[in-house]
View (tube, rainbow, N blue to C red):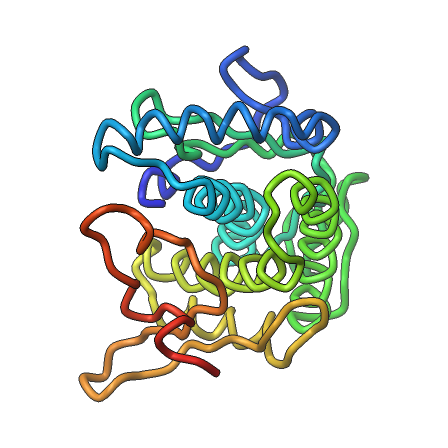
Length: 244
């Protein structure tokens, strides 16, 4: 997802090449078209494109749109956008068909009392950082729930798998926002703040931890199904080889 790190922006109009989340959720056939694009890209590189793999990639890529948009704004501005599907959009890379840009279209946001924009009509002020984290979690869960409802029937992935992927996207995005902003520790703290416990239907609290080399890593909750591609094996933190 490195292509996203410099391309989360506020926009008030979209080029045709951008996809509004609400439009995709309202017409799940768009996910099938996305999977066909991905399948072509995978076949060029691996010779095969297993259906589970295309389903898993699109699942994870979509969920990073609301999770990463919210995580970046929380980390850098201590603000949370509404994250409604109608107020988020993304563009796909010209080659590898993954989201390489995210647009926050709405003006409404939640913020802390000391925010310089707290007096603006589109601002909703909350009491403190825990309240802001709770708002982010709730807004993300509302968006993820709409995705699960739309994607489960066409992907044939179980709802537990989809919510595990939603958990991974949120935990990873909070971590990455800090790391890519030059303060990995702050990203870990944000993940612990937002995911201080398991909030159902998410499947765990933050799983970030230090390894023996004093490096941060996390246990995955979901499977991307990359191991089904020729010559590929399970990811280092795959739940298939590291059961809970």
